[in-house]
Image (cartoon, rainbow, N blue to C red):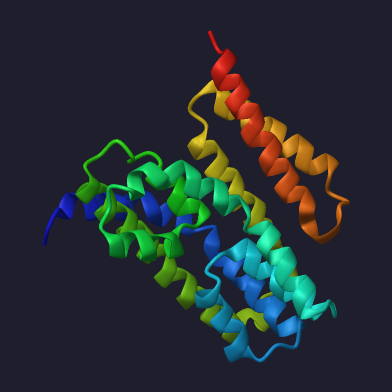
Length: 225
């Protein structure tokens, strides 16, 4: 096996971040059932979208009676942060084969982005192996857990409060990525602006907060001593 140490390290780094995704998958499974969506159709959203936040937004809005166009629009707004992910990771992808440039973005979820950005200085081959290992690990676990959630989710007691898995998951990603003062500034500004704009329709506040956080981080990077 080529570069087994890279694959092993990717698995070691990835598996702990998968743990909060398990209850998150149960929440999505419950949302699919509550929305009255056919379980097979609902599960297919796990591999068609492969983005928990956007998937949750789409399913919950469809279940509340929102039109399909409005639900898809809201999901796209939630996933708009991936445009910034793409811009940040683009230099590493420019050194990759064409097939990787086309297929790799499909696996670019929050966790994979956070891990991959720590590996951008490595050789392109090493980066690709690490990225694909992390991405496929998340993909396989997500598909299995969302399918399992559809089978046993209705039997999970509400007292377990699985919905708290979502903020725990993203909090872990933030802590993992903050290693410089400008990143801390970006995280605090982004969180504050998102909270202030939480009443905006279709969860647009998420996009506004993300843009504000990136802008604050860039400014902090340029004025740091």
